[in-house]
Length: 128
Image (cartoon, rainbow, N blue to C red; front, side, top):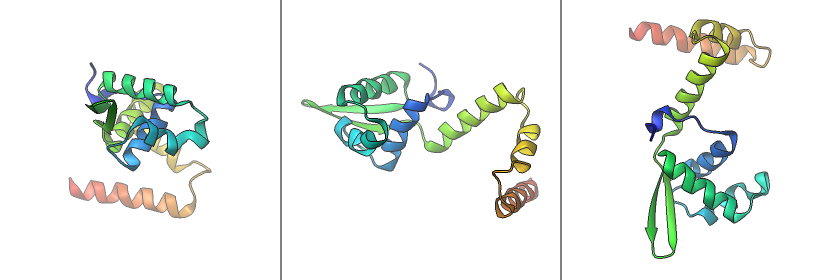
């Protein structure tokens, strides 16, 4: 089993994890209620996917009688870090500087967001 911090989540798994990060512990029915409108998935699909996430180590489960409650074993921050690392590896040959340059020059980043990115990088440099 991969360490939770090293897990790569699929798009579908992100939907489930986001629902769990919203509030946990949660049953499969709770998760379904949070994502049903967006996904149109059946209860059995959600239940199966949650069980697979538990097998991968991203989710912990607790069975009590016929009910099963799920909670994230992987923090949102660790999931984001892992996804960003994987993106950098695939799209930028593992180099973060070109990725940051790409983000800073992106048309989707407005002037305020660009300034915030620069401020965060400067503050990070001051911490060293």
